[in-house]
Amino acid sequence: MQKLVNGCRLDTELGSLEMAWKAMKADTLDIARIHENAGADFEKMAQEIATFTEEQKRQAKVAEDTVQKLHSNLKSTYNKFTSQEKTFHQKGEDYDKIQNSLKFSENNRSQLQPKEMDKLRIKEAKAKEELEKNESSYKNLLEDVAKCKMAFEKEMTNMCEMFQTLDEKRIDHMRDHLWKCTNVDSRTCVEQDQCAERMRKNIEPCDIDRDIQLFIKTHRTGSEKPPNVAFKPCRSRPFKVQAGEGDHLYSEVSLP
Image 1 (cartoon, rainbow, N blue to C red):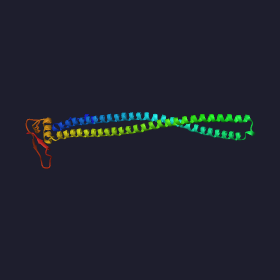
Image 2: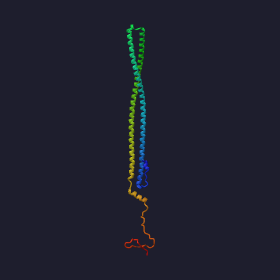
Image 3: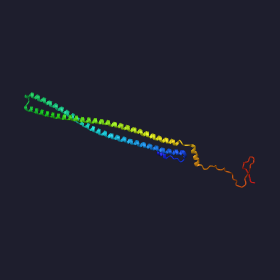
Image 4: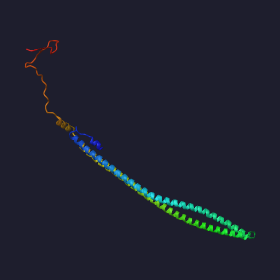
């Protein structure tokens, strides 16, 4: 719009129309400035929204990383727990079998050597020790799973609450900036309409007759018509011209 105004020349205009043109150029430059200011305001708000969004993403990522780490820890601990659970149950089955075998041997002691009974008792004691050891590990892992689960659920709850807070802030922030955008639009329209109204007021006084008279007054070469062109003879006495019937008007010319 500024280029359009700068390229507009008024060399041929005079009077009220010239004044209207100059006023319109000035108001058009004002309109260009109004739009430039509006563009700057929109750009500023866009930057504010981008900065706000990036900060929200950063906060969300911190929370997500924390929850992801706790989830991975819970998953790893739970896998150890399930593996230990299988081992513990297997040790329990092995111990039950050894106990049953020992009871059977004690009931049939006469059929076994004392050394064989001692071996069975030692085997039963080792199986019991292994079972108790695995039971302790199993219970410890069960407690670890409970702790990891509690930590994960707590952080997950905190993250969900934070996400809700972030989204509430985002909606409020976006609503506020959308409102500001409409304010910029309204301000731009009002200021532009004011420029247009000034243009109309400057155009209204234009007087065609007065501008025409001004043009005549400015560009006229004089107030009198130029004289008529008269014939000037080449001698002091005038020619006497006689024309015969059927002859050309200037076919016979005589000088007395």
